[in-house]
Length: 325
Image 1 (cartoon, rainbow, N blue to C red):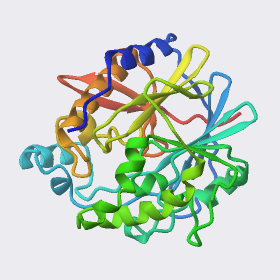
Image 2: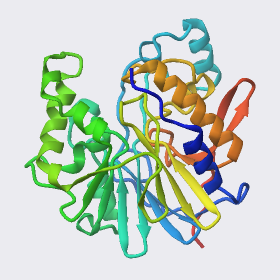
Image 3: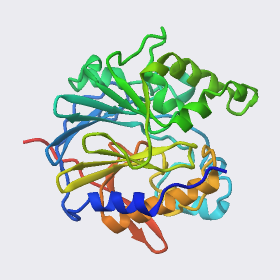
Image 4: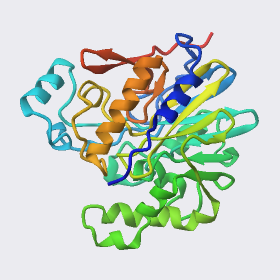
């Protein structure tokens, strides 16, 4: 089993970064007609003096029924929670991808799934939505991968095999790189397709990958925080500008209702379900204690809000989008 390294030091360092508790980032929405479907496809906000843009890769799914993906959940309790919160039994999750402008540098966090139709007909919109937001993919200097699942790294390359972000250095954990490119795992029918696809994406780019470690600043104001369980090397990132901070949590938490209000429910795509629960509880507790805003990859668009306590669990409170003046 992977040893949990979401240490007290990591949590305290992340909490200390958010010294301005109660001081919210300035969010300024930029919404236009959607490229596909109904979701707006980019959203600009400011974190201190930093400019961020959330760009949608479109929704992934349906992934299956909630009862199948949260297989250890009491069926009646899960059904009641979904019914009371108007949530669908079939899980469709967003892909909220952050582009952060750091001075003259552009940093992309995760890439979406690209053209893989197995993840739903409405996914794979990142590149056209970057263009719509006025962001040149060739100008991106760094791509930071929270973990090596298909919906987070497969759009590193085009269908031709050419890099989609040719001028970017790639940052990820060595643990995830090694796990998801391991040729020996091709014999595992449950993950064979993911291993095959990820090998095609990551192995040709290996010389451009920098492996990152817990607690290290990988870009100015971007600190890595090891949050394993969903994958063996999953990383979250504390983004800090002055007294303002935001935690980008990748897939520590998936469903904005089920995974937050019932965090002890094991999630079917976690590599280590028990470790995933442990990490999820510690991360949600940190967010509730510090009142730090959070950006979650799979939460309803654009995925930004707060986590507060609710009884012996938690609740997600989305921040409103504010129109630019």
